[in-house]
Image 1 (cartoon, rainbow, N blue to C red):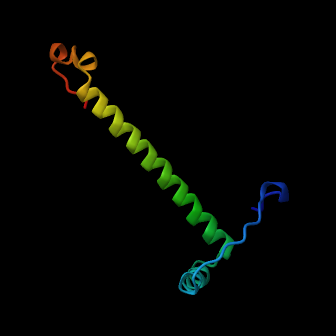
Image 2 (image 1 turned 60 degrees about the horizontal axis):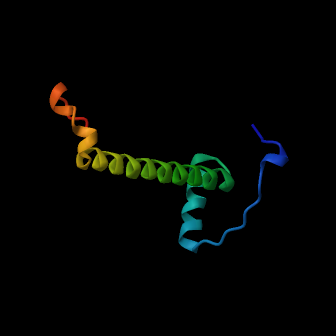
Length: 83
C-alpha cells in the first residue's frame, strides 16, 4: 500500500559502493525497492536505539534500587530482591 505524498519525505544519502552493491543483491532477492530496504533498516536501527535507551534506564534504576537504602528498607520484610 502506498502512503499519501504528504506522509513521505525524500532523503538523499551517500553510501560506499560495497553497501549499495549488497542492497542491490537484497533488492533483487526480496523483490522490493531500495527505498523499502532502507526504510526497514532505519526502522530497525531506531528500534534498537530505543531498546538500548530503555536498557540503560533500567540499569540505572536497578543500580539506584540496590544503592538507595530507603528503597530497599522493606526488602528484608518480604524476603524479595527486585534488583
